[in-house]
Image 1 (tube, helix red, strand yellow):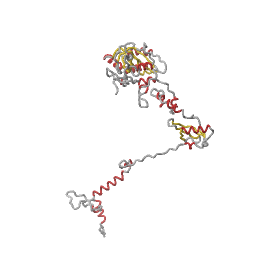
Image 2 (cartoon, rainbow, N blue to C red):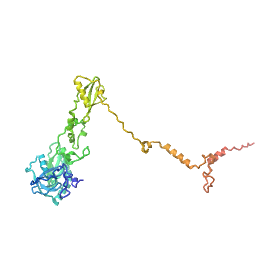
Image 3 (cartoon, one colour):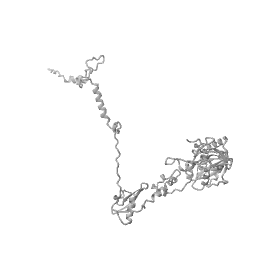
Image 4 (cartoon, helix red, strand yellow):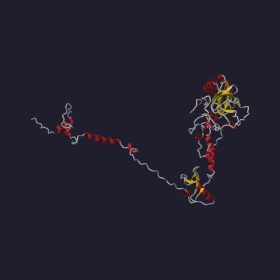
Length: 429
């Protein structure tokens, strides 16, 4: 479940004691506290530094000199310049030492500032008001940058907890002279302005998003360092060099291209050089493609480039060894392994109601048969088809029709009159 701070990308902070989660609940770039259930040796004090998380993925270390009982998820007020800032505790205990060593921060460094207190209600209210101002401030700053014609993109704004300072994160291709922009923003927002330039990868990690795999971006969830990614990583994995498919949300090559690169490089050590041609008595065959993990390679003769011949890796190495001894096999087809085709069981319609072609019958024939059956049911038993002269007879036998006399059929009357012999016409003398 998400917390109330997820909408502002601030993380947890719903209770005074914190959520006490080993992973910092829904925090970005969280660390699993696997030492939370392990007690310290007798007489040893807990490490006095804590890791505090601010907006998005910004984390810093602070010293707990007053030995406050802090837990993961607590909202605290910390030292800043000028004033104070408000953040969320993301890690406590002995694992903070490991994180400080990882980021090369000395334990006794003067850069490690101190924790003031647990945040009061007034501190939290002012902090939430500052969060609500960030969106409008960012759009106004973008408008001012466009008016000055600066080639830069302001991607994020972070207010300090006491609303005395705001940090503007921007991306640009080169150096930007934003001195006039700072003057206008200072007069517009009445706060202290700080500008920080970040790269496109850092911008994607701060803003977050969904990748082409359907999951959250690695750089905004768990990836802490950005290693260089080259197109050779895609070549090793037999991927097409399509920049639209290989680029991530930041526009650069995807970081996940490096994840499986080592396993591909190890698997390719057993494969021969693809520039080598297989020499046979029929002709030379050149390489077309390969399946690394299945250990299969495809070759084609120079005279038959559209005919792909599938060979196992062991067979290819065997042919290359023969060519080194100046021996040529008769044909590559002798090294092809024949696959046994297993027939799948056919589906039998036992019920008889699941036939997909039951609606394919023409509608006309079925309706005519139904109408004929209906007419047969309506006729009384013992009577045949109606004759031309029996139209006036009642189909119900000798029962008289009281008030329901049918009108005589004029067509039948005319037919009967035509059949009678006409009287001879008298000649006038």
